[in-house]
Image 1: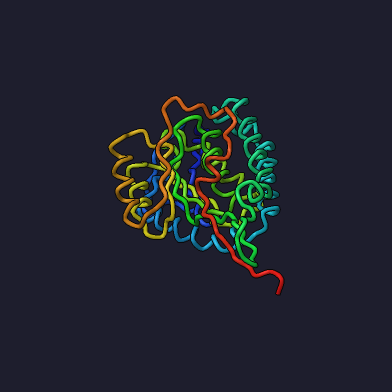
Image 2: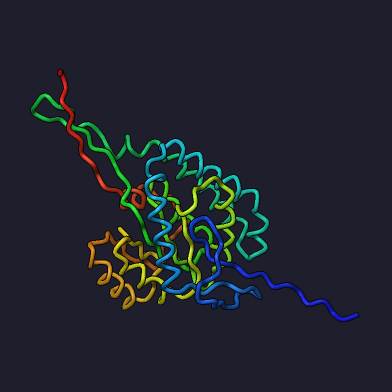
Length: 274
């Protein structure tokens, strides 16, 4: 009897709630698995999916978004051993679950902290309310593969943004496995889109895309690439989050900065006493 040949898993992209292969048909080998190598066309497709999801996700109640993020934490907890089998330390998986829960808790509280009623000299109510920026492109940090990824996705989507994430090229399995978690977490398709492959190919396409409203360069370690992306982002005045320091500690309290950095402030006037 001939020796059986093991079936090698192929990790695909995550776009619009589905798992398509790269339109280029390319892949690369990571930990004995095939991982899709996203192209610029895949990046554009992901932006289209993210834009289509903005209206319903931003229009969902903050309470509902919090419930969905909490559900993601539940599903991640249930697949803990799968991540550990990929080489993610158990402590990191636990911290990633806690990070989802932490951001889920902020969903219906941030407006009270970041918004408010303003004093005005007239018969009006004047209210400032946070609004999502829109479509956010994110270059995920290289490591920690899971906690770092959750720490850049959760603060962006909890406030109603949708994201296109360029995952770590060297640690993509955690990203695609997290996509499998999100696909079963009641998260609407298109809210999170994940591209695997070369950052140098997908990130410039995202930075130059006119339908992307902000770009988070946290995972960019090459200073010249960061400068190139900032120049491309300036073409339509994208909001830019600069690369994180090399020694950034992802285990500490993340604070509100990442959530508020991807918000706009809407001010509403309303007459009173009428």
